[in-house]
Length: 386
Ligand SMILES: Cc1ncc(COP(=O)(O)O)c(C=O)c1O
Image (cartoon, rainbow, N blue to C red; front, side):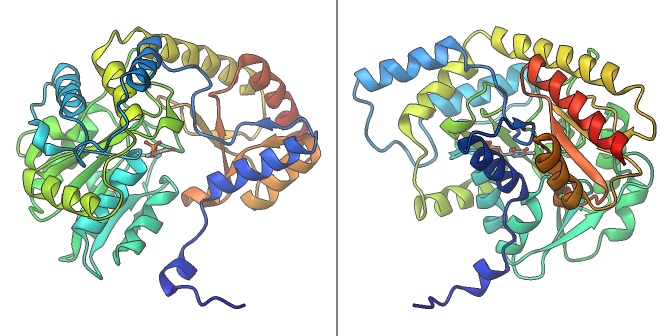
């Protein structure tokens, strides 16, 4: 029977990152030893405190619905961590906890956009932004960076129109690993102060993954920007709990209420046990975060050392997150090259076209040093074949 699907879902592009990961897993299930560097998730365990909190919650029968915005104790823990780390004050009513920050972003665009409203998306971008904007009837407007991988006010200005509702800032960036310096964020804040109707969606999924002793800089900390910024936070990467699905919205009260109303009528609260895990992780000792950052910094060093001699390799300096985004004269079509890597040397990477940059590939170094080292050797072999 031919089931008629909605136009909305017919137009939706599949997630390229998930598709590559799925293909790699299919091959692995057939016994092929694939080195999977396509998936953006830490390979380390979540903090012990978070695991204990889940076990205690199970034993205490915390099996009921919670407040649809998330438990008060988790929302308080989010506010407290934000205060400690960013010196920004929010009330628990300005927080809405969802099933991962992906869900927070989805809710946000649904609450913010009317048909034809535009959202500025700097290139390269996380693959889900454009589709989520389109699903809400909005128009993604892609902004290339004239130099490097970070946009400036000069890059943004020509794209701002009376229909522009928001700008997505994602630093550290997926896929490039680029990190905006404080002066660069300040310049963007100054530019947006001239465009009062444009809000910033600050996707801070990787805010704790900065290397070379750099500090995270939030645009919400600049004068006049707090009330115009929505912080989208995530437990997934920071606490290595991607599967437990906890993310949150932090922002102006009226928008928080709108997002909460949408969540009330769609999914209700995220899993109560996951909320307990996130509460414990956010309010407990942050040692595991530091340990993970140090581990990734070591792997990043290995990656840069091993790839330094490769002729023709161009890349974005990986200042944060756990991705390496590179190109090479032999990579003309990124889907084709990623397919070749998988077939010929069994390494899974994500084609750059999924992030708006053809000719590039994204490698995740959130894998063991052993896997990383072997994968680099295989990638070099493939590049040297031409
Ligand atoms: C930039 C960015 N934002 C948001 C997400 C969503 O993460 P989650 O839904 O697990 O919080 C991801 C996941 O890869 C990401 O890379």
